[in-house]
Length: 329
Image (cartoon, rainbow, N blue to C red):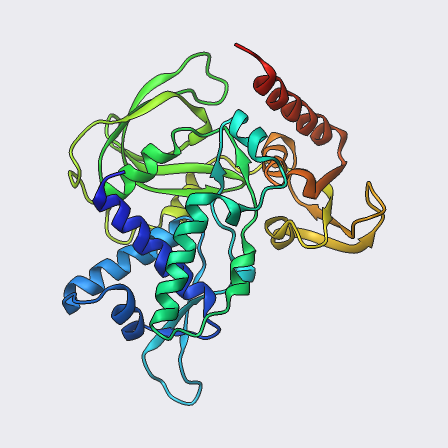
């Protein structure tokens, strides 16, 4: 990772944590003083707007509200922990097996170090920190989208990407050239949204269908995202509709926050697969392979009750991971 990308990633992480760990809305001036020191008004406004959109494109719900209920003053910003689902940690099958399905995300060395440093900096500035807000993160183990890093970096750099892509139902892949505008999570999948330069149209591509390695194919800063672009809305408009169906899952009491947020219903205190843990029954309005892949990320914190199709998919994927790790080749 280049120094410029490293600085930007650190700044985005610091902004996320600052808005997440405070109990009240944060004034823009306060954000500027701590995270964007020494910048001109114009430079700060542009960078702050870009950073907010970067976080929102990843599903971070940044709220805007009044700092004082009695006065119509400048708005403040915050992120509510109960509405936030952080991006997955992408791991190869052997890495996932070594770490283990019960690993907590904050034990991941690089992320824990970066988070600790961000909290330390905020505390040094006298920020009132609620560290319990950081408990919203959970392990999400996936090996489906190795191209994520390329598209994420290209989005930040405004660099075109060339890749091989196999559409649903197609027998082989075709070459695509894209100016990526953003990477977004929708219906349990990662998508990249941007301008398909071969077709001259905005398109959305599911990262799990990218074949082989994606490559940057141009210079940084070689294009601009159209003003007013809403990456999430574009993905929802262009991506296939989520699969229908309903899945019932037993979830450990203090786990599965992402599932609970999207649940049709939550039935507390049900009998689980063991008698030593408190479980809740969570029902979500989706099924098939998408929800099976999502459930794998929660590891031993979930147990699929129904339908049988989803149970089989989860079991087959777990066996595939075990087989990949145990294969000496």
